[in-house]
Image 1: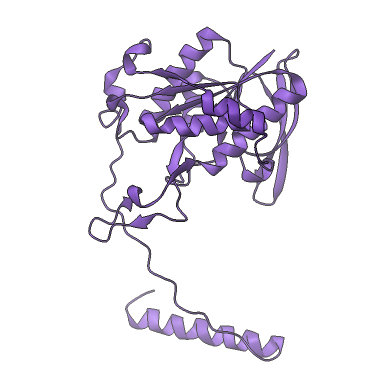
Image 2: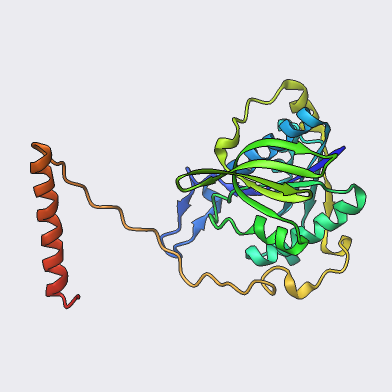
Length: 275
């Protein structure tokens, strides 16, 4: 039977969060923590695959103790088991260190029950990098399929999967061997309201929580700040865009107006020494 693992993250709700004007960083205390929306679609798709082909769904996250709430939300959606790695030594991790830590946790899960398929959201709304999923796939030496918008077939017996991958001017159909990792788009499904029995199960559920010491063959130098080669030197809020100009008249007149603006900008650019 299939064993699917969805990697998730608890993030601040970016629709509500405020920026600290002094530090130009996100004031995480100003917004509630939620399950990353892209990850919710990954979990929902994992549950749909389970319901269609049979199997079990586990979720995995790295975070502080309150991140248990994100796991419980996944149990509401229909996941069977939840795993969390939580330790101060994970703190401050960039995408490289995060993918390393999650890979070590996946290796431990693999020993409990072999993993056939890993699902991730396309990206997290607090980072927008889309790097952790492919980073995990690279470390596990399995195929990464990014921007997946449709699941066509999963065949555990033959060990292959067929998906539709979103590209700029359409989509491409890809067949891959199992195990593999998918990062999914929001359009892959709709996340429905959770049924009441799932909500009761989630309220009572206690996930498996591991520290660094519970994982095997961990290089401490690759965790947290020590294992993060990238540093955020400065963060600032982008300036508000200037108001646009409505075009009037016929199509030819509107073209003339656009050309007039372009020529005006060109003259200003050249006057400042541009070439």
